[in-house]
Every structure is written in structure tokens, then in C-alpha cells.
Image 1 (cartoon, rainbow, N blue to C red):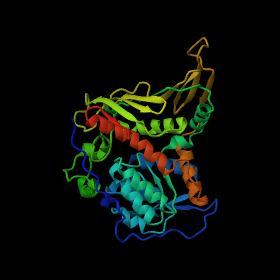
Image 2 (tube, rainbow, N blue to C red):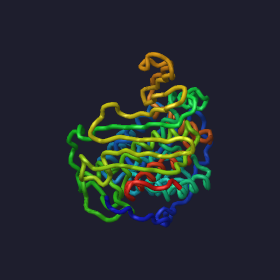
Image 3 (cartoon, helix red, strand yellow):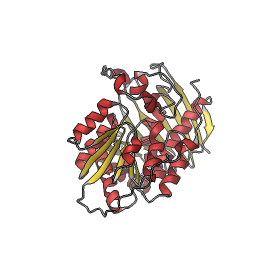
Image 4 (cartoon, rainbow, N blue to C red):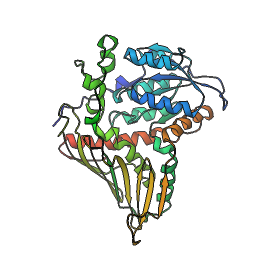
Length: 388
């Protein structure tokens, strides 16, 4: 099996000394420009800021990243307004309305907890936690504060996903004993990357609380596939789909998890590149399959009901009724016309102004991450483990 998981040091996630609450005292109006701090300026942050550009009025006030070119890119994006920092805690000491966090997974909870303690609202990319144990830490930090935290589970704001959940909860599919989820991607198709300028990188800061280790471009670019920093497909991809399942089925605690997985293609990774997993929830099962060297069919879900089946993905959904001739002809079809990330960031901005609960509160993100983490633990413990 793969390398051992390093133990969680709960104290390492306590608020760093010197961070005092600097919550904004101003009352925000619907048209006020939000002052935003950027924590982690890699590729996903670019996607989030592209969505923010379409979501509402905001200004990047500060950016923190351990790699100089990424800090420079965000500073340029802000038209030179943003201050640039290596240490994210310096950003938290500034007068901000909110921060967007898109760092590697092993930094998520520490950054979020520190941001909440500093009086900042938080948009936290998924998976919101790196270990099962961190779920309680993050949830307590959010609920003990007066701050808003939106988990990066954008399906919760995506219009056709919301419609799909309404249909499922309304009984349109009948009883649903099985949900199939899948996601195939091809990492072999990625082109060559520009070499990392190690003189502009604070590698020790990037590694953070993980075990000390030598610099690796593979780990820096593909950190999701190394246990110290991510959790592979189960916390990168599956997390999105199981959140939709939890939402639609009104159940978020698997009783049991099994996982059959291997490294057939990317032997340099810690995490498996080929996965089949199964989860038992009260009254229904969930299965997941995927691999990282084939992208045909991409990703999606199938809710298999006694009266109808729904096939759902980010492009829309189709509903097929049992007993109706022409199985390839859906009786109901809905298409997506807008990236849900835009509406999800918009929801976060709206909640910063109104102080209402966001579409993806902390409990949803913790539960979604936990399911994938339990599956990973099953894999690392020879295939199976109880959910509780």
C-alpha cells in the first residue's frame, strides 16, 4: 500500500498568535465594492476570479502565494492595487471584507480558521478539509464566529442542479436504491509546463505542516495526487458528486465504504489513478468509478429510481421513465446555459452583504469531503471500513 498518512496535530490548526479580529464595521449596500484578499493564486483561483468578474463588484486588495510569478499575475489583474505577500497572515491583518482560499488542500483549514478569527468572511475551495478530523475543527470555527463561509461546492448554486434536486425530492423518480457517479479525465493529455523558478518559490512554506521533503515539480503541479497535500480523485472529483447525492437524498453519513483502486498509469503518485468505490447509506447505495488516462464521458451522476432514472452532469440532465418505449429518448430534458461557479460566487458576495446563510454552508462541505476521505482510508486499510 501507499505511504502512511501523517497524524493530525490539532494544535497546528489553532489560530496563529497575533491574528486579532478585524471584522469590518461598515454596513454593505447592494452596490458596494467588496474588498477581497486572495489566498493561493494557482489555476483554480484564476477560475474563481473569472467567475467573480461576472458576479459582482469587488476589488482584489491583497494576494498571498508562495510563488512569485503567481503573486505578480494577481497584482497585475488588480491593476496594481493589490499588495503581494508570501505569508497569508499578513493579508488577514488588512482591512478586508472577505478572502477567497484556493490553496492546496492541506492548508485549507488552517487558512480558513485564521481568516475567521481575523473577522473575514471566507470562500473556501473544495475539499474544505484534508482529513476527517479537521471537519470538527472547521465546523466549530465557523459556528463559533459571526462570519460567512461558503464551501466551493458550486453545484449548490447551479440552476439545473437545483431543478434536478427538486425533482428528486418531489418523488419524480420513485424510490431510489442506487446512485451511480463517475468522472474520467486524461492527465496524459496535459502539455508541457513552464519550469518552476525555484528561486521565486518558498517551498518550505508551501509544504507547511506536511513532513519535510525535497522540492518536486510533480508535487507542486499535481499535489492533489499526494497524500501529504491532497486526496486524489475521491476528494478532488468525487467530492462534487457526493455533495449532490447528499443534497438530493437528504442523507450525508455513509454507514460503510469500500474501494478497489490501483496505480496503473501514474506510478509516481501516492494516490491511485484508477478507482471503483462503493458506499452504503441508509436505504440506498452510491458507487463511483473513474480513471485518469481516459476522458470519454467526462463526469456525471445517475439516480436510478423505481419509476425513472435521471442522468445528470454539468451540461444538464435527462429523465427516462420506466416502461416508456425508446429508452434513449428522455421524457424530460434540461440544459445548462451558465457556469454555476458564477452564481456560486455571486451567492457568496450576496451573503457577505446580507449576512444570510450561503448555499453551501460548512456542514455540506465537511460531509462531502468526509465521504471521499473515508473511501481513501478504506483503500489504505485493504479495501473496507465503517463510515462511523
